[in-house]
Length: 298
Image 1: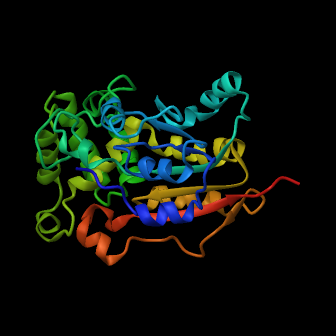
Image 2: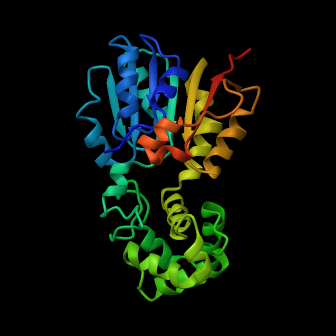
């Protein structure tokens, strides 16, 4: 079962109150949204987004009500959704609070048919929605070696990208990369044995991260939201909270929130999970929470 990360801190930092309009850009299993609904009450409104129809089906069981509007799609669709709500309700196309939890769900990880985990065998897919883009297996089969090296370097920060890229590319072109275990096998055969024996994390961790980011275009979505969409849809004085799980995401959030003419950072440093939360939910250990207030326009 998926546990919402840093739930207490998120609810506290968003400074929720009855009647607010809140957007949860990454609904997941609905853990954050359920608590948001309690705080904003029936006078408030929740807009929730998720690209994964499986996660929406899970969340809809407990995140529901006349003031709840769930949309299958990316959080970058929020402008269009708000415009439709404005036409229907007369409300301004703005939200008072905005939350992004950029991690993927334990439920997604546990579903071997999705291919998110290198520890179980399943199709090499890695998409949040199978109706979007192409699978990781398809992308690898059509990418050239230099493209694979670039993705492993930029999105996985993989030190052995120059070795892994050509090896993965060759296996893909031969039709030998159909499952998660096929890819793990190539990684284990390519990375130096000493690294494989002594690494704190299995080398496939970075490879799977890089491919997931690539096939879902994750960093483009994050950057577009932070730099173009959030400043437009968040009401002046509104608060945005973003949970990241790796340095690439966190760097984008940090850079965006340091635009002093747009954002006022509400914490000097990112908040991190308590030791107690990490013990109870080890998946939270790499989380960072950054919060900023939208500067009122002059």
